[in-house]
Image (cartoon, rainbow, N blue to C red; front, side, top):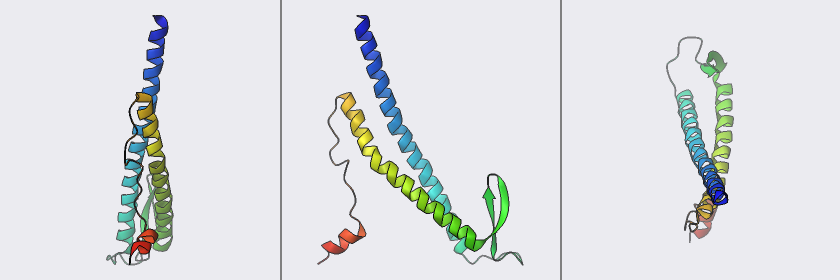
Length: 132
């Protein structure tokens, strides 16, 4: 009897860890998407021709760790663009790993693999090949 209780507890603990891993990845994707959108809005604001005080038309105030620093717009754009690429890569990496984690969780639960969950969208190069 004690062995079956230990077995059930270990099984439930394993399921909980797998589910927590999936939920953590999903929440991380949401958080990274929020940062990505905030960076996109910042890039748009910097690119707009906004009336700026005299002497600061070529500089922007940037928040670094709770401290505002005046930096040139070009270097700000470069930093934001680099951050955008890094965020894109992190989001893409998490999204490619997520289906395997979900399938592992469903397998541990004794459920079937989700149909169509591993589908990937057609990229621009493939779309050009399909056009007649």
